[in-house]
Amino acid sequence: MREDLEEILPRLSDSDLSWAPTEGMRTVGGQFIEIAATEIMLLAWMKEGRHITFKEAESFAEGNPTLEELIGALKSARADTLAYLDSLTAEQLETPAPFPDRWFESLGQPMMQPSEAFRSLAAHEWYHVGQLVSYLWSRGDDPYKW
Image 1: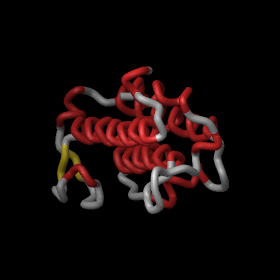
Image 2: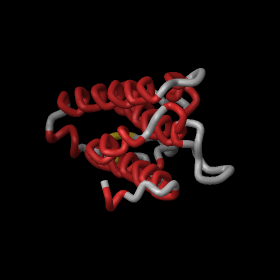
Image 3: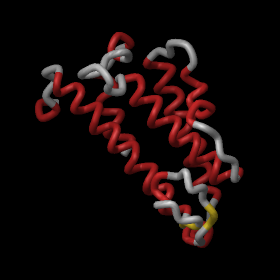
C-alpha cells in the first residue's frame, strides 16, 4: 500500500498541506497525520497493550510540520510496525489477542488476530491515499495521466 502513497508525494508541496477541497474536510496534511497517528496508536496497543489517544499519537505533528517532516513520521511509524511484525511468529499473528473496544476494525470484539489488525492498518492507509488522489484530481491533476 505504501507504493500508492509514494506515487502522490512528488505531486504535493508544503503549500498543499493546509488545503482541503471544501470547508470541513480534512486537509492534505491532516490526511498524513491520520495515517501515521492511527499506525502509532495500533502499534502502542499491540506492542505494549497501552491505549494512547489520537492526540498523543499525533504529537509528532505539533506546530506546522513540513511535508518532509510528515513523510518522516510516516516512515518512522512504518519502520516500527515492520520491525514489530517481523518479530512475531506465524502462530502469534494468528492467535487472538485482546484489543480495546476503541479499535475501529475489531467491531467491538474483545479478541482479534493481530494479522487482521495489520491488514486493517494497510486498508486504512489505502483509504486515505484514495482520498488524497481524489483531492489532487479535484484540482485537475488526473491520476489516469500520471
